Image 1 (cartoon, helix red, strand yellow):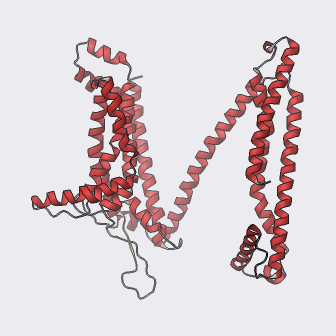
Image 2 (cartoon, rainbow, N blue to C red; image 1 turned 135 degrees about the vertical axis):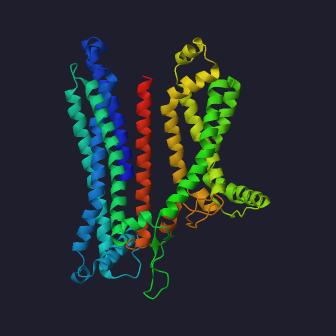
Image 3 (cartoon, helix red, strand yellow; image 1 turned 90 degrees about the vertical axis):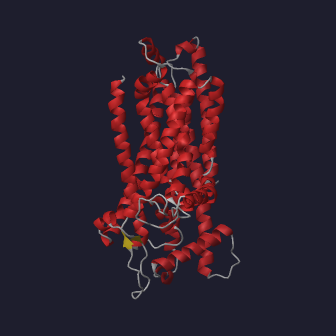
Length: 462
């Protein structure tokens, strides 16, 4: 029985245990005059028995799966001939991979060394023994725990409190997993960035004006030393994001105000879903639109006024990105504006303010924390966008504030640096982690600023 079958069996056992536990509590209740004699509802007794019999089995399967492969590989390695065990680690790993492939594909007829065939047979036998042992242990554990809970069920048993406490601990575990995962990502990026800064000074990376991360393959290669000044990437990212937010924030906020304050119900129910369709369009479609329609239009329009507009420009990428981000701002702002209590509007109108004055002086300030959150989400979306920039703004790391020229962003360079087979001991590849660390720091700073704004204005309207 493989791991998936064992997990399925554990859930089936949990369902059976639930039914048995509930039936047990009902039987006790009937002897005492009805369900009111129990401390908790029968469903809690069933849930408690299901959790006690199923969760330990799932944990056991997970731990067994982690230890099983390592233990079997260690046994197979110890049983290899001495001359094979004396091989370098890389060659020994190749031998173990060959043994594993032969055992997995049942390819015993291949022209391989006798010890390889014997080790493959031994591996199959060990895996079968391990699966059988795991099955027996899981079933025995579930049965024993089921019997113990069966015996402990009583009218005074506080099953509801135990179940709710167990679910609280499960939720805490899930939250901890999310926190530890985030910490792991941050630490992995940080450690690789430290390795990068051991080769390239941090001041050169943060304040350098030239980005050309090409490392020399030969010592006599010209221009292969690499330049890791990331300022052109930061400027390009901010330029495109600023253009996008210039389009998205006013349009999205005005659309939200219209839909929430002025539009009739029929118009709102029609326009809002149509507006949110923009959020479901793949970014590659926006990229094609920017590269094939918007960029040529901007180039031709600029030519009419005597401007030299590049075929790939920050303006084209920013405009299309702004259109893509409008639903993020409008949808979140609309929901927040609708959540403002009607009593604030009525009080303002009762004091003689017009509808537009009420919106400007009461509704928008009251909804400002949510609007800031929506704008922050839009900024993060703009900073992290890659496909539109690749197709509409290009890959050239030009240090310029001219929106009609070609630029690139941090995310585009991260993708470019990590595409294909790369060596993770060269500054070229490690620079992607340094860029990721800077991007993470910028996002963290934006979140902190947004939290301060939200905290300040939320206190004002509590």
